[in-house]
Image (cartoon, rainbow, N blue to C red; front, side, top):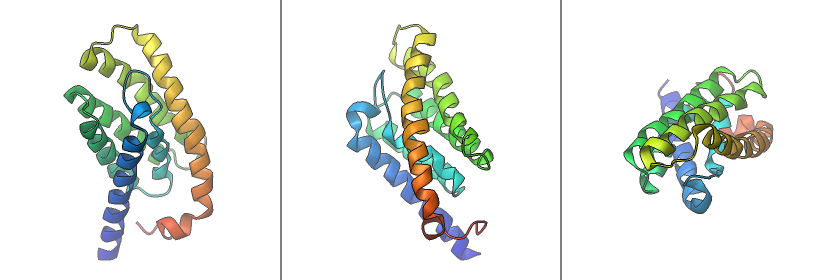
Length: 164
């Protein structure tokens, strides 16, 4: 039982660290009004392990703090990633549907963060479109590739299914 807790915490910490590193490495496209946050491809990881849920949330929270985001973005942007990760976990039995929660959560929440946190005066529907396009690129395209690559090594990377 103790080994499962250690594995869970280790996986969550590693996922958070990778999320932060990807945001910092791709900073010019990870922050701002128009973005393709490459780290969002990691939101497919709840398919493999529930440890990805807190890992993604903490990684996003830290990335937003490091990136100099305003408090509204730190809170609600991170909550959007958390909602997306939880939704991915609950839809993990369907490799197509599991991509939708992070796309929808960010497409709906982030435009309001841009308006009320940063004062961006573009129409909310337009920002939903631009944020949605960025999410489709990060999650549906990059995330799908990552999902298929990691599925080949599932047992090695994430342990035996059902261990946690």
